[in-house]
Image (cartoon, rainbow, N blue to C red; front, top):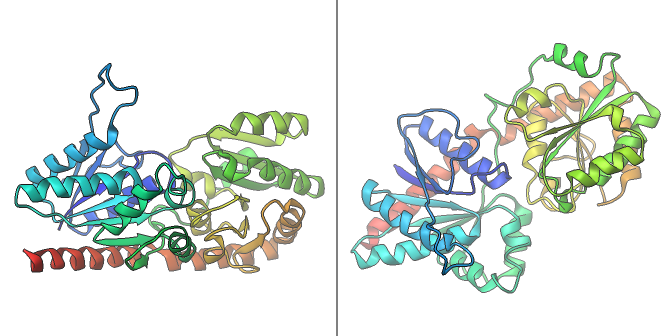
Length: 379
């Protein structure tokens, strides 16, 4: 099939999943067209059946804000006309679903039709979509989609709760590429960071308030008081400076490394003993899943879709949002002995296999075929 994928090209979960999905589909012989305003960060390999189309937004003095949604819709029309795509798969409700609807209406005037699938990832529903400025557009564009998917049961429920959705929402969870994220021996790297056998904790995020990075430091401080430990803070965002200021006030900076944004996450995760994700909300928790695929147990909040991937007492532990005392105590339960840590690592690795890309991609393929078949039936 010829599939157009519309996504944000950044380090966020929706863009990462969209790119990984496109790469996997290309490996299976599909022709993939990425359509966005810059090359996706994980689109760093060449495939003869992968194409990238940049959305150009002209700057005119008349516009205080460049009309990206209009430029995207026009680009979609051109890409579909020039490449005869079978289906569009848009990730994140706005502006991608609304632009896909706009493009489809323009194409219908030309006697063409293009079905589109909308995948909901989280903040497009829980944050942006609930803003009264955008709510009606989100509802309309979701309902106009030929099929709708959500990355977790929790997000599906949140969508039905918050919007008047008239169609079924298919739950297709996020996935992990086991060819990339898997357990490998990086003991030589680990000894560079923890030369005296210290436990290594890690956190990965976009450092926004919803990630509660101050809780990460609070948990680490409590663990560090009981056992020699190091902390890796991976990513960047508006709360990074706050976190750096706090680590200085707590006098724990010598045992913390702020690594910024990193492409080779699998290398870093393979030296970690424990992953911390105390978020206010996660629609799924992709960072935690990637850690588990590298054999790293998880301490997380019980918010959103996290209980769907982090199994209490098996792959790690869950706690109420903000309960850093429980999180620290649970962390020490895991890290307290080599035997306990090894068991949790094995459990995390085994559970992550349930979310293998090989199991998830066929679900999307079936959905593509379903919506494309419906299109041809109506022509």
